Length: 362
Length: 276
Image (cartoon, rainbow over all chains, first blue to last red; front, side, top):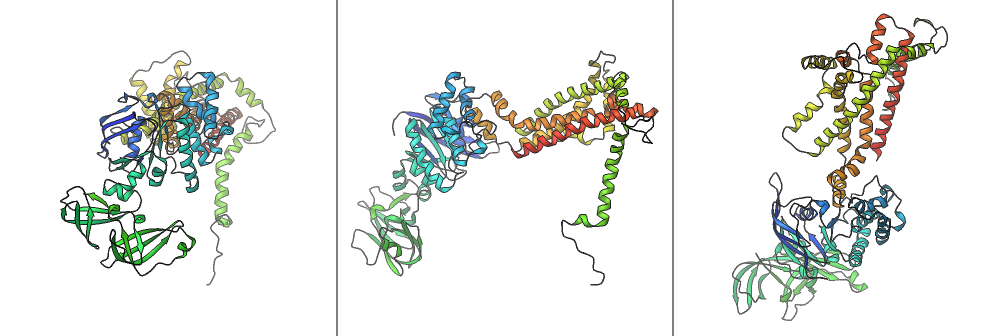
């Protein structure tokens, strides 16, 4: 976001492991300078392999990786302008915190006199200024992670790679560290590439997100765009909650697509493109309204029976079923104290605006 | 129930009389001979039967027995070099088996631990035949004349080192090494700064093991030793063939002490490495 020139270019990279497992399938990706970029996907989608290719621990079977304009083909990990925060943090247990942070400077031949000052600056940056002489074994999980961060950042890499950096922390600490990482990234201005399977983590931290599945990049977009305009069924289902319907195409005429949806009946949607195949429809639960009466025109509305309510504090999720057996999920905000106590039951009208319906071509 | 036996809890086995007797008999047969050996090394008598009062003169006599001291020096020299090379070879074998996948790895692994399994006597005979067949030069000046024995010792010691080190490597987090590489270390630097410190307790334990194995090996040494290359255990054996003098007791006590100290250190070090 801060700059537009790509610092990382991944050009048709594929990776097949010995034994025939294909981890990456023709991946193209550009990551911009100063960006907080997230690789998001379920486990086994190839996101970690891609990160390890950037770090130099895996070699692509085909394709090229450019970092800072240079082709990384045959460039060993210790000669790349990137540093990594490992999932296990990999802080050296036999060295003090300060020695851990100094290690990268020592082995890459930094000016000896400069090392203590740079180490102290890095430790101050992650708020561990007082902990230099401790051993990693004496630190908490969150502190060890900060050591790993300081150790990687002290080398002033062009890109910082983070492999599931928050997965080992408990829920509360994880939220604090999400904000902390964003603050850190803005302070140092280094490009961050983070691998995560947690959509909330990616949505809340990243400038842009690449959603991956089965070795392919499905969509690259800003968080809001990804959530509101997922380009395919997997992305729509993986990011947030969604109501997904199957629509049989019964005709397109003058910008109106007519569909027959199992469990709902006939649905007409505005659609600029002339489609002549069946489509999937996706509606976010919070875009749906729960009404006592059938709304005026301008809404798609269906009658449904309330089956269950799940209370989440700020919102509640209402699970309904239409009389033809289609399950719907509607999210309602508990914006007053009264709303939280409200008992919803019986037959209700579920309504949403046609333009809030996403048409997902198969 | 008629004649119900007293029941014992799971940790009460020690209360059963026959178990207690077995336990104490085991202790007696294990340690009484050793205790007698040590006690009679201080006995002021030429024979090992009657206690005639305390003396250190047999230690003095052992110390002044040139051929015994020569044998002792031989043993220590052999043990030193055998340990050095066993640790190097064992470490490299452990790293190789831990890190790489290669064809015939399983047979290779089995072949490496073969010297641990095969009877010492077979190995001794094999070594003797081997050195005779290749015409290993005899009559070299000291300490080169110990070469054959040292090689034999290395060949049965390094698998122990490899096993100890490999057991430790199995719990190594590979991301540590990758982190070092990522921070700018070459492969060699990462090995030196991360893998080696991690292996260190295993290497020390393996070294002590190799040292004691070499120091008190008799069978294989007996077959590979020449007339000028007598080691301590072989010398003791030859002395015993004439008569069991307190001098032998004294020398054995010293050897026992060395072995005991080294083994204890090895165990302590291994316990410490298990806690890291």
